[in-house]
Length: 246
Image 1: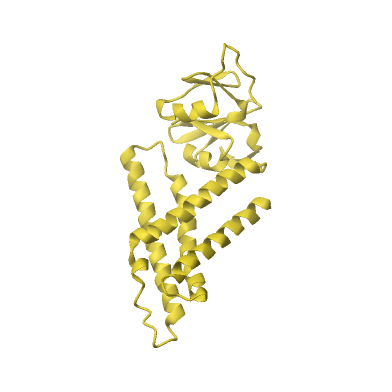
Image 2: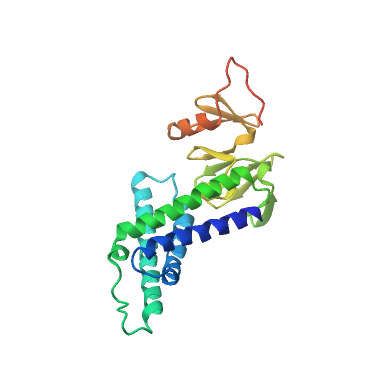
């Protein structure tokens, strides 16, 4: 509940700050507050869809997916801005609601606001997950069965072609058709991507060498792409003393 209230407070504060920016564009405070709401759906959409870009794709495909998301979100923002402008001024003949302030016709200005709102949301979600770790169970389908596992009981997720395997603490393995990037977003803090095919539970993992993470007696490879981030989270044991999984 705390996480929800903090998140709501963030978006209320973000809309008020955006409204203050719009006040400088000759809107009164009421109008600016309403116009700031036009940014809310777009910023939420950006926060939701950008993390879902599959990082296992090639660079060209990732850039294409990111561009499509940004263009869609920008189109949504301009549409909502126009509709709110019409609603605010349609009953005032002396107001020319077709005349947007120049800044609101500037796509770079709109993109900057959306990026700041979405990035602030990302930082807050990351902090909240560390401060209030999720304890809710994870429910998914595996071979036409509904499986529910505690997050801490998932050791690692392995991508195998068109499906993933979820390896549990009790030794069970479950197949699922969601991509590994979707699992990375679902599990969030406490899980670390070490390879395009592996996502591991940090609390159960030991970095035995720069290229190997050991978890539950199994050695998993660390790819070059993820080596730096893995070393930050899982330092290599010194003097040959391998730490116990946390």
